[in-house]
Length: 313
Ligand SMILES: Nc1ncnc2c1ncn2[C@@H]1O[C@H](COP(=O)(O)OP(=O)(O)OP(=O)(O)O)[C@@H](O)[C@H]1O
Ligand SMILES: [Mg+2]
Image (cartoon, rainbow, N blue to C red; front, side, top):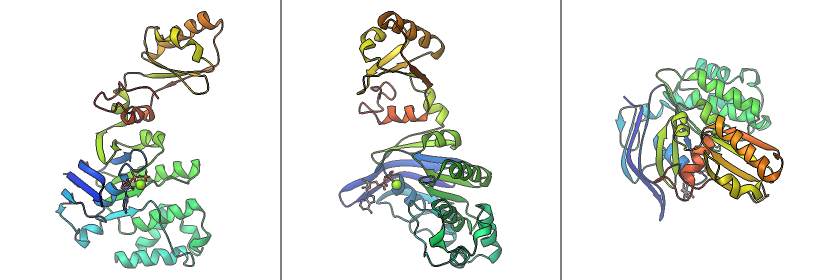
């Protein structure tokens, strides 16, 4: 059974529609990642799953309990790291944890365990106001862990973290989840979502457009390679006709972006055409497509309807 199930959920803020017709479930053991542009509705969707916001319509079932507000016993089995967490700067790390543990009514050992889980056991006496951004983020996670939640929600946990802190966050999450625990998070770092999420939910304009593994989403793209040819814009017309080339778009800097299919064949064909037309092969980069490309295709104006046939970006 799913930990959380949303059916046909809608939410407005005044006249602004934040969510409509959302069906989504969170399965035990999974890392589910919500991705989509600013204002798409990700935070609203998380808050509804967390029981922090009441939907206007539809049904929400959390850990077997349906309706709003969530009973406190259910609410206590969810861990929440908000997009912005404010702590009292003059409290120490240990005092902050004490406070959250009291609210959650858990024994002291849970505090120490949660701090250790995020690697903050050494800084219990430090004032929260003196923590670095990354340490504060870890503290936010520790406070969400005190009650041993079944689902841990993190809204943009990696924003503001350096590369090393991000990778240790992901390692932590990967180690934390088990067959009963699920992680739901939002991120704008699509490489991370691609590497870490079991399923990705694409949110756009208040709707969940698609839920699938990153591999599936990427596999649905028509192209598998993107080439960027420095100052190649003038060769656009001749590249268009090359076998395996699906789309050609000059960039504002005079470079040329080429979407192709069948990486191993299309790249040599394009380079030899470039040599013919330009007398030489200009510097170029070749990369295989990833979640970022799949998401851009979903967000293209021609949008999904014609999912991945949309204009290249
Ligand atoms: N408290 C609020 N009152 C009014 N409108 C709101 C409120 N919170 C969000 N909105 C609006 O609802 C829509 C969805 O916002 P939401 O914060 O859920 O998006 P998001 O996907 O989390 O964006 P971001 O990536 O910027 O965090 C936006 O149009 C936003 O302006
Ligand atoms: Mg948000």
